[in-house]
Image: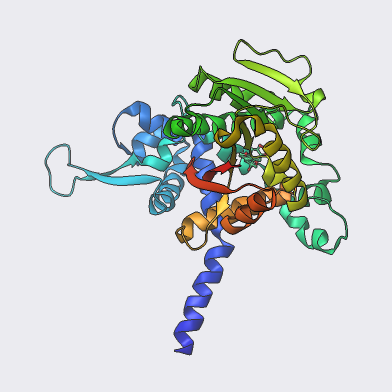
Length: 358
Ligand SMILES: Oc1ccc2c(c1)OC[C@]1(O)c3cc4c(cc3O[C@H]21)OCO4
């Protein structure tokens, strides 16, 4: 009926208006270190145990309870009923346990995404959104971030300010690459049989180092702009080469493009891919290009995965003028660059590894 349609439409609209509340409640949980406290406690904790462990003011005990109610509803904690201590009826107590998503916030674990929560929900990533109306009215190629602040996000990061946002961003990248290293173990077959690999746009080689550690037999070259790789030294199976990926790329059995093409439009991406094809031509049919980026797949992915990929697309757009591509857009790009075939496998949860063959 029209009335129930209005009812559902209202809920849908208000839900999206207040989505920020669940993001910020998650940020609060990360800042309080609730996951660390429950983890080190070793078993589910009651509100009073948590409040005293977090040294909260008595007035904040009920506040904590309401935060945990929302976060539990959103799958970050699990409620358990503790049997009453003295066996008296009605003495049961509610205790909170960690769930897989909140275990990702434990600081001393090898995979900890707390830095991503901190960085991605930092005021520098959020404030710019208030300038989107102005941004839409401009006929310039600025990112939303530049339009809002008058400087690029990279300039902002490299400014030595007291809030050390550069450190926060680097911690986020490091957290991201820890997840990537885990994913590398799961896709060893992609790198099997390769003697050499050039990591195009590899920057200071943080990720390439992870790859060369995971595949010790693989001779890795980090290829980036001269000023980026200047005075960086590698080791026996890791070296640095400066150059311009739009001109030519050093030859190798395989070329890696990790989070590179999502920063370039189609025309420039085809140019990069053509230079990659040239770089692996010495390897004949065995050569390959390994692309790691998001592949949006609204048909194959569930709604939550697609929403995350589309969110990420807008984060890349607004902060870096980057873009994420649909599967068919990748196919068009790959064939336009003269490659004959490709294979897409998921990696790191919501990203994809695309093997491209000449
Ligand atoms: O390849 C990646 C992986 C993660 C992130 C990237 C790029 O940029 C945006 C982001 O939302 C972000 C923005 C940030 C930040 C960290 C941070 O992490 C997030 O620190 C300050 O601003």
